[in-house]
Image 1 (cartoon, rainbow, N blue to C red):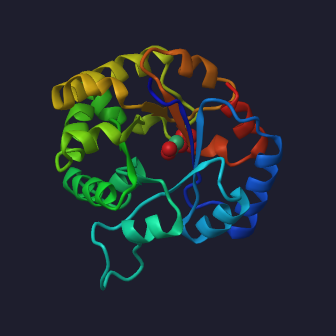
Image 2: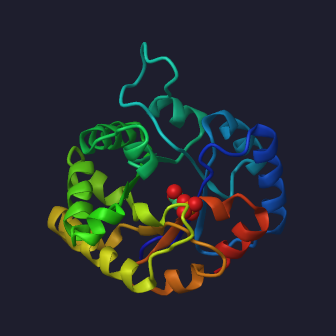
Length: 248
Ligand code: PGA
């Protein structure tokens, strides 16, 4: 009943030329199945990706960030209504790089999730503990707080349509992935937290795992219970490895 989602977070990689080339190559070799494949290119490459994907696009498209206002004097920012107008389906919210490099708080995430939903887009809310928090045994409390506070401004229907990604900070870009068991345990914590918020509808929310997913570990991670897909950075930048993950 839940969607399986393979999401490529390209971060600050692939300008318009490289991004379009990637999509053309990927499209010509990818075999569509039941799972959804989503690309999160840089905002500057979004139009090129959309054009290369074709109309209708066989992929979902998303942006990596928005500012929590519809418009205005916010030099350098992009808004959720603009992302909608550009053809996005998803918006990443609360990625650990936004939280830790740019200082975004749970309150920022809540404001962004709200404006994303109200713009007719789906927030993909990322949560995850640092290594220090994990070592102190705080994983469950941290991810539960990030989930509850991130979704705090959504009503039950909106929260049901959101997507969650568990991305332990220590696993992002480090080559050290969570074990399938670590992922299953934390995904179960998140599912319980969702149940507290939206009851039985919690079963409809896809929870992705992210953090050093590669062609070598994707199948094992996807087989873990409550793991409904993956959010991939580094290994989504090469056509070959992304094709391999999407067929795991
Ligand atoms: P990674 O990044 O796959 O390179 O670890 C994942 C992410 O940041 O979403």
